[in-house]
Length: 383
Image: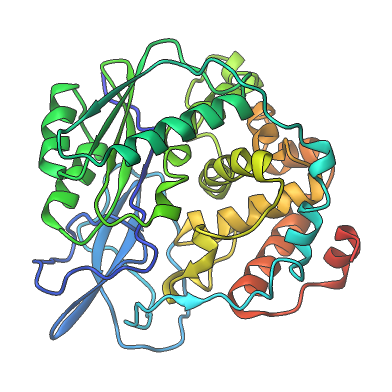
C-alpha cells in the first residue's frame, strides 16, 4: 500500500543551492523557488505534477506565462518554466509595522473571541533522538506539542502513538526513517538533505500506519525552530477537521488532495501561529515565511502560484481577519466532492471565492511591494 504523505516541507526561506553541488535538469529538488548557480547555466526548482524538479533558468525577461500545477503523477523530465530572474536574494517585505498593517491590526483586535488555552493531555509521541541532539531543541518541540494540544484539543489527536525523529545528523535520520518503514517522497527529501549540506528541513508521512515526522536540527534559527512542529504534526488538525466533511463521509479520506493547495499549505503554518498567539495575545509576522519572500515567489496569485506556502499563508491570515479564527479549519469541514470549490467556499464564508481571491492577491502585493489595498477590502476590515 503506498504511503500517503501529509506534508513535506524544506524550510529554506531564500537560501541558495550550493554552487558546487551537481545539478541536472529533471533531478528532484527540495523547494519551489530555490535557485542553483552553476556556470554557465543557472537552475531553478519548479513544481511539476506532484514533485519538484530542477529546470534551467533563462535570462531575466518579463514573464509571459506561469506554470500551472497538474495532477499528473508522472512529471516530464524537463519541465517548462517561465523566464525568471536568476537572482535568489529574498525580497525584504515592505509591509509597514504590524500596527499599520490593516489585516494584522484587525486580527489584533480579535483576541477577545479567542480563548486562552487550558492544559490538556497531548496525544502520544515517541521521541527518537540521536545522542548529539541539543536537548533544548527537544524540549522546544515538546513545548510546541503541548501548546498545539492545549490550543486545539478537539482536533489535535491521532489513534496510534506518533513518531518524531530528531537529530542534527541527516544520515542518522535517514536510517531511522528507513527502519520506521518510510518510503516515497519523504525519503526523497531526506536523501536530498543528505546531499545538500546547507539546506534545512522537516517532513511528515505515514509509515506503516504511524504518523512519522523528522526534524533536522541543522541551521534552524531559534525563531524558526519554535514553530516547526506545527508545520508537521499540524496536518493532523486539518485531517481531523476534514473528517467532519461530506467528502470524508462519502468514503474519500484524501483530505490533502481534495483541498486547494494554498489553503492546505497556508492553514498548516497559521495553525501554529494561532497556538502561539493564544498565549502571547498578539499577532505578527516574526519568524514566518512572510518576512522573506524570494523574487521567484513574489508575483504569485491564488489561482496561478508557484510557491503556495507564501501566498497561502497571507491568504489564510486574511481569512482570519475577515471570517474569524475558525476559518483556518472551517473549509475543511465543508469539502464536498459533489460541489465545485467555489460553491463550498461561498457556503462556508458567505463571499464569492472570486472576490476573496482578488483581495488575497492584493494583500500579498501589499506585503511584498507595499501596493495599496483596495477600498472594498479596507472597508471590510473596518479601516
